[in-house]
Structures are given as structure tokens and as C-alpha cells.
Image (cartoon, rainbow, N blue to C red; front, side, top):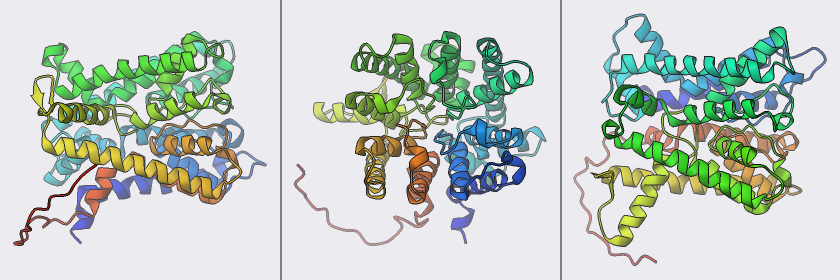
Length: 430
């Protein structure tokens, strides 16, 4: 069928196939420590979390998995962060095979660039950026963790944590996220910077690398570079003042950075104020930049949505950095925002139905965390029922693949080609 050959279909099926492969590998006896029983639903949930770079986990990784199992998780995180399409096309580029029309179309849909990039060089740079930043993060992790670990254990945990941080995965081998390291400034800064850089997106990194001057940057890059510090600062101040006396400024900044879809935590979220959790939900919902290792509706979507609302109130066209935003971009921004909000609300309601004994706000935070591919949890993930874990797995998958991709899988190719024309209707709104 033609639909099965579409790039949208390949993206949707590709990510699901990766989840199944990861599930199979994690269920192997060599992946699980002797004497530990790993439920199939937990293995599937964790595979989905790793591939979708979410970070929610129903089990303690260091106590459950062997070195092989941990390596499988790291591999899934790396593939999920770069995207299987990026990795596949990079492999093709490295062996010198020319990218065909189908491959270029697939990249257009994955990267959202409309064919404006030299894909071969871009893909190689994306892998290069990843390896360089992960290497730098690995070195700083070695320094930050040298007092608690040594030898091969120090090397592996430093490497795993660097990969997890840059890819905004939030999975750790510390046994309880990063609460024991709330006073390790070097580790917190290193993890935050890896997360922030990974969340900027490969398009932005590529643009900064090539242009190097603000006036030469694309509008997309400018939006991401403006929204990132604004959200970081707003999140830091909101968390710091909302949790006044319970958290210092460094940890407030760290939690704000992690809300950009990484999910490492130095705090017990179940002890936070409701206002703090609500603001955290908002930060998670917005997320990082497009074509990045982060999730959420993306900061560019939020920016365009707000700019469109302001322009609508003023009765003017939506203009950003002296460029008019296209009608298609405005529609996409509003559609993604509304769909994500509805899906997050629906997920929270379903979780509340399956988990009547749990705190409703905690469950809504869990649902938004899954959909936005963050990984924050108010200590409820391990206690969830099988149905709730499957609901969250689906939310992680939908969040990573993207609403527009899923919708376009079912779009008819001949849409709009019909001969019928309908009379316009005037509907009173509001």
C-alpha cells in the first residue's frame, strides 16, 4: 500500500520497532541480574522510556540490570536521542551511498527543514556534536564523581550519565536519581549544561556552528535561543520562591533545566507545594527545541502560539524578528498545542480512573511527564498497575513520534483534490 511507504509511516513504525527490540533485549537472562525477576510490562515500559528518552522507570536500574542490560539501555537512549532516522541516514552517508528521493523526504519530515539542508553534512555534524558534547560531559563526570566511585565503575557510570543527560533521558545508575548529589555543584552544572545543549536541537547547533553571528541566524534559531534562557530563568525563580526555604538557587536552576525534558531530580517532588508542581507541569509541557533530544510541544511552538494570540488581539499579522509567520506554521502550532493539552488531560483522567488511591495532581504530573518525554515522577511510577504503565508507555511513544506525524499517517494523498465546493458558514465563537 502507498501509505506504508510514506515517511510518516516509517517514522511511526520505526520507533515502535525500536521499542520492541529493546524490550526483547532487556528480557534476555544476560540483561537481568541473578535472582532478580523482571516483569514483561516493566521491561516494555523501560524500553519505551529509553527509546522515547523519557526517563520514567518502574525499577532501580543499578539493582535490576547487569552491565549488558545497562549497555542496552544506554544504546536505546542514544538511538532514541539522535532518532533512528538520523542514525540510519548517517550510516548511509558515511559509506558514500547517495540519499535517494525517499530518504530525503523521510529526513524532511523528521527534521522539518523542507529540504533546505545539505543532509549529508548535517547528519555527520549531528553525530559529531553528540559525541563531542558527551565526551566533554563524560570527562567532567569523572571529576565530579571520583570521590564516590573508582576504576571501571567510575568510567561506566560517568559515561552512562553523560549519554543520558545529553539525550535528555533522565535515566541514572545512582539508585535514586540525583538526590544524594544535591550539593555536588560540578555534577549539577555539567548535567544541566548537557541537558540544555541537547535540548537546543541539532538545527540550532548546526546554525550556530556555521553562522556564528546573531544577524545570520535563522528565525528558528533566534526563537530557540531566546526562549531557552527565558524559560530557564522563569522556572528557576518560580521554583525557588514557591519552595522558599526548602531549596537553594542552584538546585532550583537544576530542576528548571531538568524540566526541559530531562527528568533527573535532586528533590522529592511528592513533598513539593501544589503550585510548584503545576509550574513544573507547564515547563514540561512546553519542553525543549525541535529536532533535539528533548520533548514537549517545543519552545518554538509555544512562542509562535503566544505571538499569534498577541497579533490576533492587536489585529495585525504575526511577525517575528521581521519575518511573517506563515499561516501553515500558525495552524500547526495551535493544532499541536491543543492536541497535546487534550491528550495530557485525557491521560491524567485515565490514570486517575485506574489509580483511585493515588493523588490526582501526582498522576497528572506523571502523565504530562510521559507525554513530554521528561521523566519526573512524584514517586508513583513503581506502584502503578499494568494498565497505567501501558497508558504511560503509549503517552511516551506519542510524545516522541509527534502528533503531526501520527495525524499525517492517516491523511489521504488526494485530500483537497475533489470537485465539490461548500458554502462558507458564519459561526458565533465565544
